Amino acid sequence: ETGIDPAEGEKIYKRYCSICHVVTATGSPRQGPTLFGVVGRKAGSVEGYRYTAGNKNSGITWTPEELDKYLTNPRAVVPGTSMAFAGVKNADERQNLIAFLATLK
Image 1: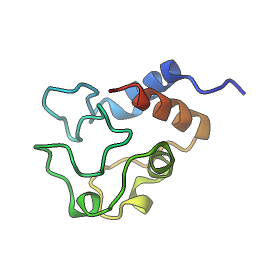
Image 2: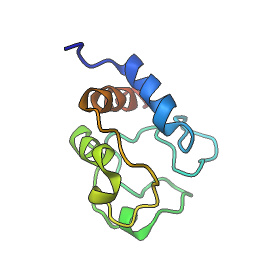
Image 3: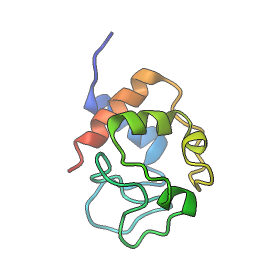
Image 4: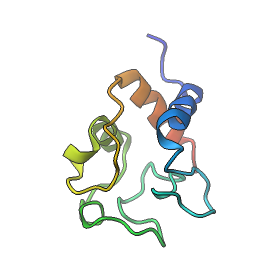
């Protein structure tokens, strides 16, 4: 048990997420919306990003618990999401990734 490590989470972000998501407050989104401030944000709420109806209407607020479920299997949590990502199957990697995302405020 290594404990939760945001620095490890940043490596996970770079491996899995950075191709489609930026982590800055400003700057244009890539294929996906910015992940800056994602922890605690309502799904489908980044101004100027075109979300799928599934995401906009999901009613999800991205708590660590919701992110854990979503990052395990995005399409099971938000049917109709355009996120073409199978998920992070390793629980430790997910926890580190979520810890990193929580630093982005």
